[in-house]
Length: 355
Ligand SMILES: Nc1ncnc2c1ncn2[C@@H]1O[C@H](COP(=O)(O)OP(=O)(O)OP(=O)(O)O)[C@@H](O)[C@H]1O
Ligand code: SF4
Ligand SMILES: [Mg+2]
Image 1 (cartoon, rainbow, N blue to C red):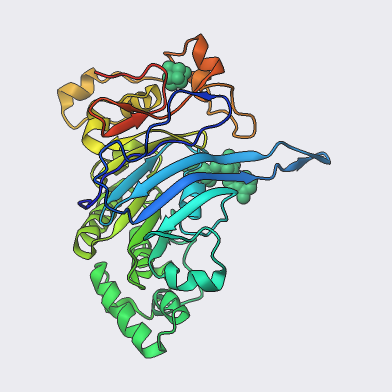
Image 2: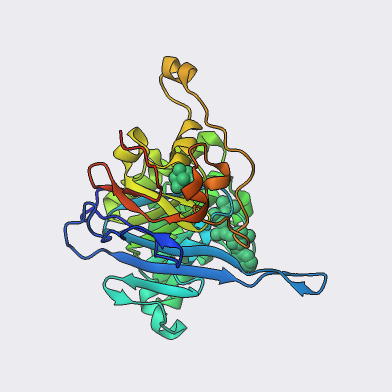
C-alpha cells in the first residue's frame, strides 16, 4: 500500500489553544492533491436526557484534520469512545458533520444531498467491525454483494456476475453465491463484507475495526487479504483499530486519537520507533514484541483511570489527568499539533519526546 502523496495533520484551534498552527502540508507533503482531505471536522451529539434533564452535549470529534493519498493506508488508533467510528462515518458521509469540511478528489462533498452523493458513494465505502451484524441474514450472498451495484443502476444479471468475480477475489469462491450469511464463520463473513465494499470499484475504504471481532488466528488472514487488495487495486484505506499492533503491518502512516482529537500522526516507522506523545508511548508499550528477549524487557506504561467523558473534557490538554509527564501548563493550555523530529510527524504535546 504505497502512497503517492504523503502529508501531515493537525487539530483545529480552539479558543484556549496556544502555539503556532503548522501548515498541514509542512510535514512531508509533496504538493500533489490528496484523494481525501478533511478540515476541522467536528461532531457533537445531543446529551441524553436523565431524569427529565438534558445532559451536556457530547463532542465526539473535536476538530480533526486528515489527508489521505491515493493508494495510502492510514491507521486511526485510540481507546474505546475516542471518536474513531464517528470520524470514519463522517468521511463517507454516513454521519453529517456538525462543522468542518470533507473533500474527495478535490470536491467539497460535505453538504451534498443524498442524490448528489450517489455517484460519489461508488468510490467511498465502509467495512464494519461485526461482519455478521452488518450482513442482512435474510439475503443471499449474491444479493448482499449486488445491492450497491443495483443502487448504481446495474442489471440483476450483471450484478450477480460481478458478485461471483468478487467472491473469487476475496478467496471464497462463487459456489457460495446462494448461501446465507449465518452459514459462514466470522472470517468468511468479513470477506463477504469486503466483497460488498469492493463491488462498486471504490477508491477509499473506511475499515472500522474490521478484524476486532475475529479470532486472532483469522485476523492475520483478513489483514493480509486487505493488504493484497489494496496493492492490486490501488485502494486507499482508513484502517481503524483499538491498538497499534493491528495496524503495524498494514499502514503507511498512523494517527493516534484521544478524546476526539488527533494527538500524534506520522509515518509508521518513525512513530513506532520514536513515539513523541506520552499517549502514543503508552499505547505502544502494550504491543507485544516478536523478539522473546525484548519482550521480556518490555515495560508497560499503565494509564490511570478511564478516558474522560467527551461530555465533560478536562481543561488544557485532554490527556493531563492520566499523563505521567503532566505539568502545570498542561492543565490550562491545550497543545496544538506541532512538527516533531524530522518533520514527517506532528504531536499535540507541550513536552514531546524528540529523541
Ligand atoms: N449516536 C450517538 N449519540 C450520542 N453519543 C454518541 C453517539 N455515537 C457515538 N457517541 C459518543 O461519541 C463518542 C465517540 O464514539 P465513537 O463510537 O466514535 O468512538 P470509538 O472510538 O469508535 O469507540 P469504539 O472503539 O468503542 O468503537 C463516545 O463517547 C460515544 O458514546
Ligand atoms: S501536554 Fe502535558 S499532559 Fe498533555 S500529553 Fe503533553 S505532557 Fe502530557
Ligand atoms: Mg468504533
